[in-house]
Image (tube, rainbow, N blue to C red):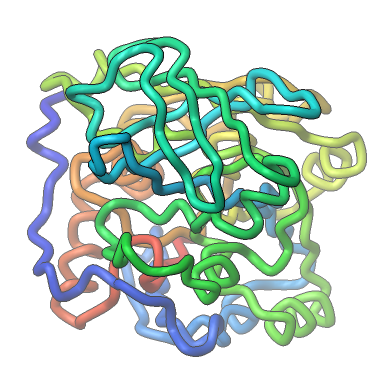
Length: 345
């Protein structure tokens, strides 16, 4: 399949730069796949669309403040995105990271950080990844809490020369996040409020947590013409015995987000039985994939030609997905991480 067949037109002004004032007041586009009918609603109406016995599978991974800014001795501004912790002791931590701009970066270079911190460039790991050793006062975890920024995707614009936006640190995080490890939010969960969760539970709808730590692959575009040639970055996931038991007994299973979808489909066998397990997945879901366990999908609107858009096309059908997206554009829905969402049943 040709990647160019999975595109759509999106005006720049529909790319959400800030979250809604209230989480559950984002818009919700409901699609009945069988009837091919759409409804324009608000997220606080989600309980009206679900039934007693439905199970919502949520990704409880917590986003770490993984973006830092520093300067080379020349004064050039450097942006660092932490990826994977490799080593930790009392004096330093070593991380794999992305660095921009990296064209003139060399091993043994030093990046000066705020509050007399520094990052030593140890090695180039790959075309995009570097190994950095951080030395900061009072420990690196405390340093991140003070100076780290929400790892917002590049289409959300923020001033690099100002202090971290505390609103982003709060809102680029689900209210049920528990397990630190993601460098991007599972954005379908950003719409849930305590009020909506309370109403859903009172209606007999269960929430089941699983964990998938979202990695930097979520920022990477597909760079091959034939989508079958694309290889996903591996991401770590966990499903507990308690969660797998509820999942396997669910009448109808609705995945909150593409991360929950990929985790469930990675962990189930050919009969749709989801096993208790942990490990890494690089499952790439694109049109032609046969879903084994997921019955419904709650998700944001994703970038054209992205692996996330392809997953939605696989779930709802490419032609129908394009109709949904065209409807969303025509009706001025907000797109991407801080945007609105849709429920596909």
